[in-house]
Length: 368
Image (cartoon, rainbow, N blue to C red; front, side, top):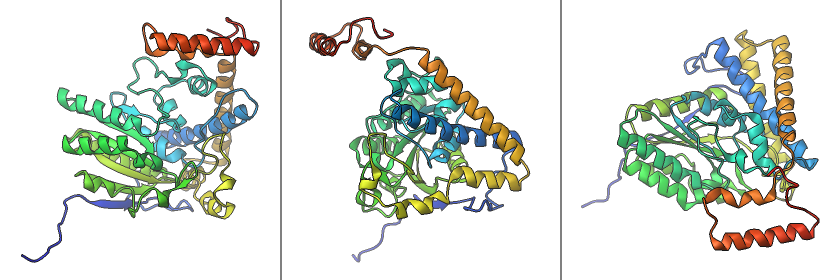
C-alpha cells in the first residue's frame, strides 16, 4: 500500500482582534457594553498598579520574593472575566487581576508574598484553588476538578493557567492526555511570555506553536494575541462555551511577553537584551485597550484620571491592611498540612526554631 497523510479533525487557529494602534476588526469585536468594558480596563490597570507596588514593597523589604506580571495583564484578566462564579479557576501565581476579579481581597495576595500561609487560601465560597508556585502541578488539579464535574453532570468549566515553561513538565502533559481521553470541560491557558526564568521559549520545544500540542491529545488548540484583551476574551469564551456544551477541552496559547524580571530574585539583563524587550512596549495591553475604548467613546482623559486615582487608592488601602497584620510567625509554615505533625516535621520545626533563636528571634514575636 502507498504511504498516505493522516488528516486529523483537530484544528489550530490564530486570533487577533485589536492591533497596536487600537484599530479593531469589526467582524470579530465582541462589543462589550460600556460598563463591562470599563470594568475590564480597570481590572487590567489594577493588576499593573498592584504589580508595581509589590515590586517596590519587595525592594523595601516589606514583602518577600515577588513574581511580576507586567505586560501579561490582558492574558489573565480577560480570561478570568469570562468565567462565572460557579466555574472553577485554577491559578498559578502570576495572575493578580484574576485573584481580584474572583473575590480575593488584595491584601490576601500581599499576604502570600509576605510569608503568611493564609495568603494562599481562596476566600470562602470561591471556586478557586490555592496559589500554585510548583510549575504545572496545578494542571492535574484542574483536570481532576473537570473530571468531577463531568461525573456529576455539571455543565460548568475549569480554567487553568500556566506558563510556557510549564509545558515542559510531565504534569502538564498528563493532564492534557487525561482531559482529551475523557473529554473533560477544562481550558488550559498557557501564558507564553517567551521566558521560563532564563530559558527561552525556542529551546522549550521544537513545535512551531504551543497551541498545536493539543492535536496530540485529541482536541483543539488556539493561539491568540495575549496582549489584546478582546482576543483573550473571545478565544476564552469560545472555549468555555464549548466545554459547557460537552464539547471537551481546549488549549489556548496566549502569546505575550514578560516585560520585567521573572521574580525579584532575577536579573534578566544577564540573558536577554534591551533590543528584544523594546518592541513589546508598543504592544502594551493597557495602552492598546485604552486607545480602543477612546475610539468607542467609552473612555476619555477625565475618566482615565479618575480610574487611575481610584485604583491607586485601592492598592494603597490594601497595603495598609496587610501591614497592620504585623510580622508572620515563621513557624506557621509547619502545621498547615497536617492535623498532627509527623515526627520528622516536629524535629525539623524544633531545629528551625533553634536556628531562629540563635539569630535573636524569640517565640511570640510573630503574629502567630
